[in-house]
Image (cartoon, rainbow, N blue to C red; front, side):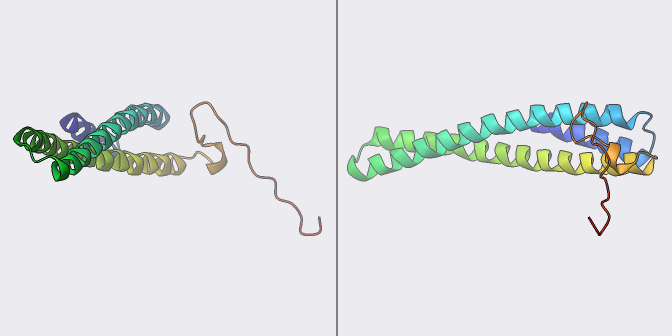
Length: 138
């Protein structure tokens, strides 16, 4: 998963830096969809990481009361699994944060290409009406 995310980020950076984007709005919609998928992946891995951390701490507490080789082996097995889960979650978290930055860059590019700020939707299909300026006397 981490490799796939890194490849996607590299391809997006290449597109943005190359300046050869034909349809910025379509790319932004695709990026929002991808961000949603990666956020879901990140949430699942966060829950699994928390579960393994709680199990590891619980077994550590059990070790304090029951001095058994089997419990000690279980503790080290959980610890060996916990470290890669934390690393993988770290990669997913940083990758999603990078996707947020790339989305903001696409939004800035879209503003430069002539779209007024008030017409750029916060979500696909939502148009934000322009603000009405009130007079100071009202």
